[in-house]
Length: 428
Image (tube, rainbow, N blue to C red):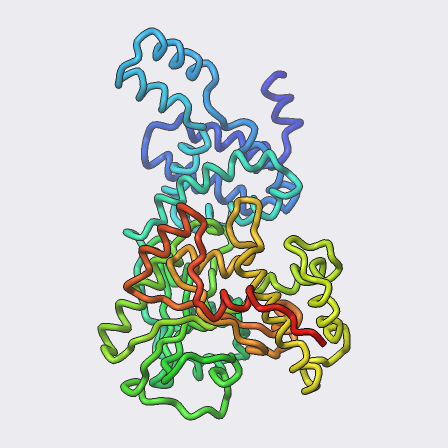
């Protein structure tokens, strides 16, 4: 097609794609930065339909140079040495990766690419071909956001308001109801909050953890968040409780740095409070409710026993958690069910079905205790029948637990949790 006709029929998204292709031909650094900024600005100005069109272009038109790759393959076959292997490696790399590297040089490029991947993830379910582009984002982000580039900061009431506003917005586990509630989580002597930051994302936390310093392992979230609670002098605390961990950037989903966060926070807390002996979470069980419904119907895997399904019938009554008789009647069967879910329910990759369990067990924690009605909020009852879980970070066992989980799929669990699986329903 003649150039003037191509331009006439071009869409805004295709125009941005053409600019991206031209960027790969630029040799000068200054002009390259300018063109990269133009591509990112052009993408930002596209509507949702245009962005999807550009992302499809990115996936379909920026793969490896096929002619160059074929020549490199033939060269390696005829002369299989280190030099030809390197040429083959370079030729096999999708052109997308070099494009993303060049876009990253633009002012604000890293943040713009994180947002671009957020768009890509939003569309990927209905557009499987985008997975090719996503693999390159993941490959590069894994390098750009590795632990060596991350900075751990304590977030307190003196932290700039721009960051504090984002803590309120990004809190994903226990909603922060405005500035007074945020202050109650940051300011008292028995409260801490830490976040990982990246130099290229100014005042944008990547992930943060909220910590309560206590004198024992808590069973429920309400006392920790109680407006009227009496703060504990930090020097009297024996336990550090990680009660909320929030990932802040959807565009970095799947890029692992949460494990580094917890280990770094443990080290900092131990340095500041040598008397702390126990490091534990108070975690939600977000997938239990969705798993329990088909399990009760007999279609879940592993299925519950007929007796357990019968014992769980009071769950169908509205307000069951507020009725003492129903609460206590449900405790045994629900406790067995949540233990089965956490220890035996698996995703397709063989890992635990529950995302929070995967995170903490993968970090080397031990499944220590399940807490019945640990969260009686509407969300807690809906998502997890009120259960919360304590995952214990025993510093002497973290590495061993991590290795066994990753290499063998072994879940480190306390005897108390394992015993729940062995219990049998008592005869009526």
